[in-house]
Image (cartoon, rainbow over all chains, first blue to last red):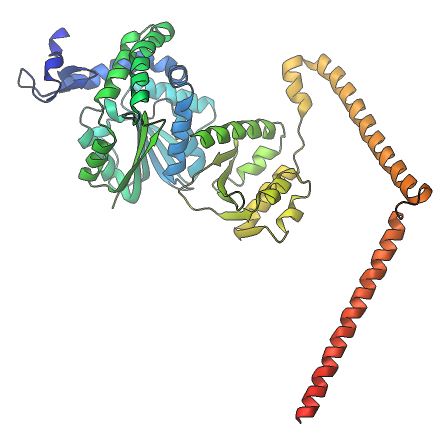
Amino acid sequence: MAALYSGDSDMNDPRKGSDAEPTTHFGYKTVAESQKAEKVAEVFHSVAAKYDLMNDVLSGGMHRLWKRFTIELSGVRTGNRVLDIAGGTGDLAKKFSHLVGPTGEVVLADINASMLKVGRDRLLDRGVAGNIKFVQADAEKLPFPDNYFDCVTIAFGLRNVTHKDDAIRSMLRVLKPGGRLLVLEFSKPTNKVMSKVYDAYSFAFMPLAGKLITNDSESYRYLAESIRMHPDQETLKSMMVDAGFDRVTYHNMTSGIVALHRGIKP
Amino acid sequence: MLISGLLAGVEHGINRVLQMDSTALPRLDRLSGKVIAVECSSPAFHLYILPSDEGLMLAANWEGGADVTLRAPAASLMRLALSKDKTAVLHSPEVELDGESAVLLELTGVLQDLDLDWEYELQRWLGPVATTLIGGHLRNSARWTSDSFASLSLNLAEYLAEESRTLVGKREAEARFAELDQTKQDLERLEARFERLAQSLTSSDNA
């Protein structure tokens, strides 16, 4: 496994590996593209059982407000079809299920079987059923027809995708014209002081909390590193525009620690 | 974010209260998918209410359109929240309604008819025996307080009207008001007759 990492020297050009296979980021490490999905899957298999608890501990409950704002901007109505990619434990899907009603449809998709199982069990235990489907799917190759969904969301999932451009294009394909994509993701703090505090918090407290609660500090070190490697607000905006989205805007939350990007399919 | 956090807290509290009434959530379920916009004119703020079988969702922003919009100043909204007769507040002149008003009337009806089962909630924490004892004691105290206030109010009214003669009695006041109303109507009729006579005089002069 160590042979998969080529160290930090290639960080500026992630697709240039020492061998023929293209490489990509896995946190601060560079790995072969074919290995990233597997390594991300390992992380989420490890944290799935205590994912919600860790989200609450690490964000101080703020993730609920970030997701709440995402729901508010989704504009989802009765009868809509909604795709929640990397839906994890189903926070967004649960709300969407109520909003679309019995005539609508919500698809909770996640590439990771463990996360999908936790999400499915949690929603069924809470009586959320009937208009919701669970699909194990890769965001880069969504197994849905063209022009099918009114709204697509991906919350804290895009940074784990190997080819983000392909994933955004795939989301554009499955959206109906006029449909909206909402990308909720960690981003770059807009305030320098906040940035310093956030760095200290991410690299000291998060792995420690991971160790204490899930006995897995490495997964939370990856979380901190993957956030730093994720495109900042403007870069992600231009990626969405390049993919073909119209009227792309973003909203910074908590001083830019998290940003919500929104684009409309023309 | 601050407003979102505040709304999330209020929403949680309201939904806990709604869960104490066995009929409220099934009635709210009938309003699922509807969006009620509340626009407060002074101070200016917007609030969106989305009912569902889980209770109410409160949102500071909502990108989809609203089914009904309620516009009113803060004082009227406060009266709407606290008043027992919410329908009367909705019909007051400073309150404006746009869209499907039946949705808002149904929501206010649900909130107006709330019959909270505090004993069930208490029983979950304290058990049936302690709840019965505490419940009985609280009910007796509430009844005594209510009776005492009613009695005090009647005695005070009687003292002010009959003994100190500071105020007139209720029936006497009602009789005077009725006379005043009658006089006002008579004056209005007289005014209308004068106007008609003046018009007929003007038209005969022109002829």
